[in-house]
Length: 351
Image 1 (cartoon, one colour):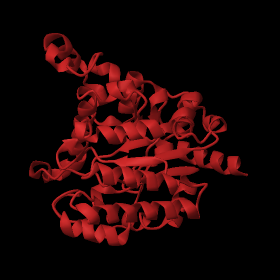
Image 2: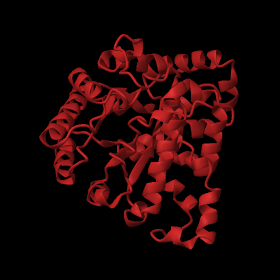
Image 3: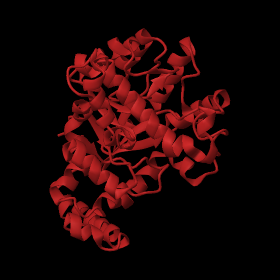
């Protein structure tokens, strides 16, 4: 019954894509190779946390003003049942849920308030998973202003059954490769925690016009955090880290020539690393939320299909991530099955 339903959904998606999907992915043949179709990039919110966060940081995230709750997609971030209905319609079996930090970022909070707010968000994620254990994989946020507090909440969150660390690109200007996060990354590596790195918006006033904070700002933040993790040697010191980049890693995978050129022309850039910067690209995983089929193909060519997981940026993005992949003619059923779920299942230890 399940396979029949999903096959029907795949056929409908192919029809909407003008029949292109049948050429690239042999119709819905990939679904027989993918027992669990998983969206790695799905957001949720908590009303009390959201109201407090937006009152403290009205100039960050979605432009200069808080996002109106009347927007149709906002309602879905508070209601797991609505999300499951959309998952069923799209043929998504499970989703990794992460707090929408762009909207309810917690970096304004300090001390006990930061601990309490992060705990609250994590408790909400755990409650969704408890209600629908076969549909959601939970992630957790951490109070990054104090690494001791972050380590304590990491331990508590994992006891709650949350599997993924929901990490921003930076905390108050310090990107994740900064040495202040060394102990935290070591703990992730030891525990086998998967980190999903998603910027918490762009507050720089220059990016606010024309919604550039979203169109290019997020992608630039992803470049900055990946560059930080590479050049500061965090990946060198912790080779077991499991890192998933939102939005396909932004521009980073597509413009490595100048970084590699510097490895020869400016050897001081290699102070903390032993390989050319481009060699570290496969140390990351990337979600498929890139919107453009050719960009997706180039990302796969650059890092390998085995480093890509499906991500829909649900419910903020209206694009169906399953239909997006099915409409890329170059993807074989085996490759599509890996991206749509098999790689994420393996990464999360769900197989």
